[in-house]
Length: 324
Ligand code: P6P
Image (cartoon, rainbow, N blue to C red):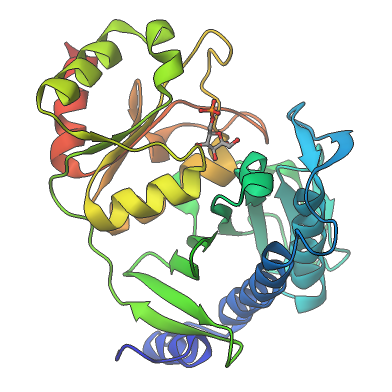
């Protein structure tokens, strides 16, 4: 499809390409795009309308909630509830399942409404990450936790929105990975990065160097090798921004277990799974210390996991060290 196509037209064309598609997933994707446009607006004027800073509250993770965290959570919840395709969602910002009240909805969504929000006050890129499943409980009944614990391979779509120098929405429905840049003047997401394929190799590595002494030996060995090869260290501290750069330029992002987060810091259902789905559809790889991220069996909603994700040749080198 030609660059310049709008997201709406792209979604419709892709729906027509699949006979079984009945339009609900298309509408769900549009609902997410609508919320993204609103969050884009709030992010870009946060400093002007006192939306920076903290709420003085903590989220379910025990992290201080930023005002924009709460705004983004509300906006995505509202868009998905009003859109009519979703029966329930889980959010980084909420402990429990959020029921939309629409038990006819075919889909459930796991979302990190605003990841990297500690960067908001210093004007660094932040992002939204989402993962979509077809519910497994009967339509018409109340959704349950079972709908969310299907495992990474059961995702029907996944994506992120990066609020950076421009705002870009990147998603996959299991086929290509496509990027749409937001055109403020039109109020439309425009296809700018069709069929993204991550470079086979890369020379960028992203991790929090301050934690290196707590990493397991294999990871320390890998990072020493990166330094010896004079790779470039790039770590923004905003997962979506680090992931997007590595996806386009070739690189690896590592968040290993640390003393503070012995199971890893990142959340399986709305950070690791969706980015792993995207990475693999773009030709990359995503593993934990013991195998593919998508193979990890989910046990509970806000489960954490280590994450190593990026270019296949860099991931193969890391895997060999982890398996040694
Ligand atoms: P650290 C932000 O809180 C986040 O979840 C990711 O966006 C980011 O990559 C990571 O944590 C940063 O964590 O421990 O390096 O500050």
